[in-house]
Length: 235
Image 1 (cartoon, rainbow, N blue to C red):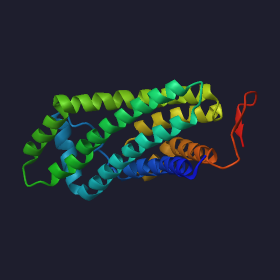
Image 2 (cartoon, rainbow, N blue to C red):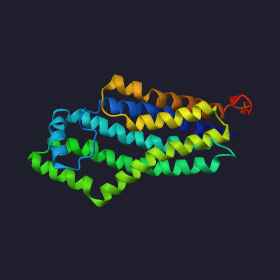
Image 3 (cartoon, one colour):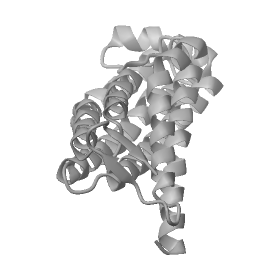
């Protein structure tokens, strides 16, 4: 492996724990009661006062969410590079679905976080702010981005977990941990930093371990040896 390829793979590996940290930071900062799709007047009028009181926090959370979803795109590509032969097609499909889903999710999270904070602090009535937010979420593009995000965020981790399981490039328990951890991370709501850290711990652990595995493959003279019987990968 030449230096350029090694540097590229190590850079991709570092993206995994950074993505997990961004996810935890985004959910931990998110004010309780604002992490929802604003599709009705009742939801909007409930969320707007909260957003007005915590606008700076909401701006920070929304920005971290967008960055985290950008990291997800890179992370899927990095994980897919681990898979060879069996499972490689599945890993490629998972990376494609996950990347598209994360892109759509970034747009949705702009509406959920940044747009909500902007509407709440604009010098307009709450009724007017509510109408704008509802129009965003109920528009055809808004619904399309939300649906693609919801579909991909649950499907992609499962496909990637199966691909890792079949390839035996990592211990099978790690493949399961990644799939389960991703699903738990996507279901985490704004419940406070302590609960967020606990709920996202499996996801963060899987991302760190996979990053170490990707980094290991770049070490010169240390090819990975697949032990089919013990289902371990050793250097």
